[in-house]
Structures are given as structure tokens and as C-alpha cells.
Amino acid sequence: MAGHPFGELLRTLRRRHGLTQAELGRGFCTKAHISAIETGVRAPSGHVVRHLLERLPERRALAEALVASYPPRADWLQAGLALALWGEVAGARTILNALTQLPRGTTGHGARALAWTRFLDGRLDQAVPLLRGGVEHYRRRGHFREAAWALWELGMMLAEAAPGPDALWCFREARRTWTRQGDQADQRFRAIVLHSEARALQRMGAHRRAEEQAAKAARLYRALGDQVGEGHALLEAAHAAHGAGALERGRLLADEARERFLSTGHAPCLGIAELAVAIALLDQGPARASEAAQRLARAEANLAQTRPELVLFTRSERARLALLQGDLAGARALVEAALQAPAPSSERAHQLCLAAAVGQKPWPEARQELLRLAGAIPSPWERHATLRSAARLCMQLGRWRWAAELYQAGESWWEAWWDPSDPEASTASSGVSR
Image (cartoon, rainbow, N blue to C red; front, side, top):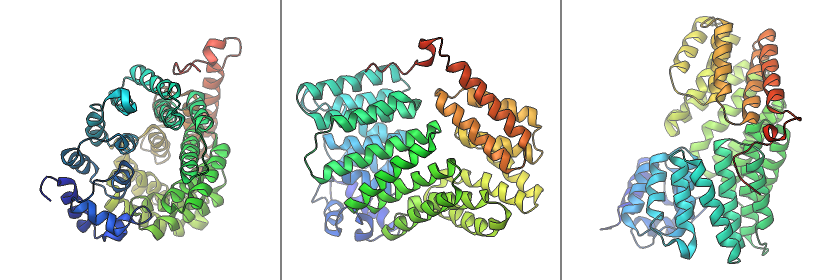
């Protein structure tokens, strides 16, 4: 084991979380494969590293141990990219910085890693040209699968910054560029890209189209026998169905995703699936409040153990539940606690609506804060979707006038941005020329 801190740490963390080698590798690699990594006999591939990072919460420590144990290899890029997209910035930097030492002219992965480090630095203007250069590098050499992966990365980068047509174009161009060979890699790549497209569409408020793409991804993952991937795609479809107003279908899809996570022992996403079920039940009104309370308690307990940074998302739903049960003081305390923690724009918008509903803030003050929040969102599609989502919550709370005001604000912004008489204004994008 000397000189292989990654294997030592992996064994320590696996035992700490009560997992056997078979359970840790389930759905991806064998017990013998995990054993070989722990004993330093075998170096993990980038895809296996990504799987391990997804299964264990100590991601930064694992990334540091990986870099300390092995020389960088090109396929680590997927692991570094996953950490970046999961918001694990320190761990992502550790892996991506190691990859920038790779010779750029041989694989192109070093330049792609550098692009993602620029993105993490907030320099989208530098990151996009680097990735576009990577796409052309691969195309000139006839490496169309690598070009397709680079296009997918470009789409993910643009979607993270501001989801819009440029990101969707990248995903579709990635599917078109990929050279099909009738192997499992074809199905996996298509599943990943469709799943990513669904997530971008969901953030843009195109819920029905997002559900369609997520359902296609789920079928492809199922054909591959990848139950974790299928669970993630089903969960995306559940969020999209809920956004489209199909509450019961969203609940059923979220429960189906939960079953996939249970069958594979994928604990980190169980709480998210439980929360999606609880939200769908809450949205169906007082008749299902008791079911919602049970699922919400399970979601919070699971997230506290596996994803403590996501517990904040349960507070708004617990406040809604308290309101349904007539506990105004309890709802107010929960909203106050939620507002004190950092939150994404869409979640903060919901918290502000709830703050007004429980009397913690006057509605005019909450509305102005919500509009300032939405106005800071770079993507006009996501800005519009955020206001519509907040308006729907106001309707569920019985605040119809508030909902109408938010809908009107969203439509006014949309009309001001989408000016048919000014082509430059309505087609402004991230600067990705096609």
C-alpha cells in the first residue's frame, strides 16, 4: 500500500460508510476490481473514479489522494468535470490542474481541463474558445467521438452559465458528430447527452420537452443495465412533469427513481427522490399532507446523512406543510432559518413567497427582493421560468394576486427582451458562433 494513499483512503471511507466492496462497485465494477484498487494492484480508470466520487461524500479528500497516488491520465477528465458540475470546486481543481500538465498536442484533454479551470475561475470568455478549439482539433484529425465529447462539455459549460439555445445546439451537434459503431458506447453517449439536454430544458422552463428527453435517456440507461443512470434520468423526468403541472405523474416517476436507487444502494440520491415525492404530494393539497409529512421526514433524515448541504431544500417544504397543518409559528420559524442559509435563485424565490405568506415580510418588500433576484439571472429563459415557478407556488398558497403580479412581471421582462424589431437583442447569446 505504500505510495497509494487513494487505495488506503478508499478502504477507510468504504468501511466508515458500512459498504462492502461489492456494494461500493455495484452496477459499475466488480468486488475484485474494488479490492485491486484498495490494495494498489490496479489504478482506477477515470470512469471508475467518477463512480466512486458519486458514491462517497468525501470527494475532495478522494481527489487529493488520487493525484498523490498516480500520474495524471486523460480519462480523469470525466471525474474532474463531474466534480465541477456537482459544485465540488476544490476537488475539481485538484484533478483538472493535474490534467493541465498533459501534453496538449497528443490527446487534447489538457486543453479541455484548462478550459474547465478557466470556467471555475469565472472566465467563460476564455473557457469557451479553448473548448471550441478542442472541437476543431479533434475534427481535423478525424477523432469525431472526442469532438462530440468536447461539444457536450461545451453545452454543459454554457448551460451551467446561462441555459439557452446555444447550449441546446451544442448537445444536438454532439449527437450529430458522434460516429456510431453499434456498440454500448453509442447508447451511453446518447443517454448522457439527452439527459443533459433535459436538464437544460428544465431550467429554461420547457418542461414537456425536458420530460420527453429525460424519458429517452432513461430508456437508454435501462437498455445498458445502468440502474443509477436510469434513476437520475427518471428523477429529471419527475422534476419536468411536476413543472408542467402533472403532479401525480411526477410523483410516480420520482418513486420509480427511488426504487432504482434503493436496488443499487445508491444512498446519495435517495433523499432527493424522497423530497421530489414529498413536494408532489404537498402540491396536491391537504388530502395528502399526512403522506407528504412521512416522505419529507424520510427525505430530511437521508439528506442529513448523505448530502447535508441539500437539507436546506427541505425547510421550505416543511414550512408549507406547517401552513397546511395550521402551525403558523412553526412555518415562520422554518422560513426564517431557511432565509439565513445560502440558496440557489429558484429556491430563494420560493422562500421569499413563503416569507410573505407567513407574515415575516410584507408582500411588496418580498416581491421587490424576488424581482431583483430574478433580474440577476443571466439567462432570460431561466429568469422567466423562475418567476413562473414562484407564481405557481403563490397560487398553491392561495395568494392569487401575488401570482398574477409575478406572471405579469415575467411576461413584461420576456417581451422587453424578445423584441422582433431588434434582431440583435433577441438573438444575443454567449458568443458561440456556429
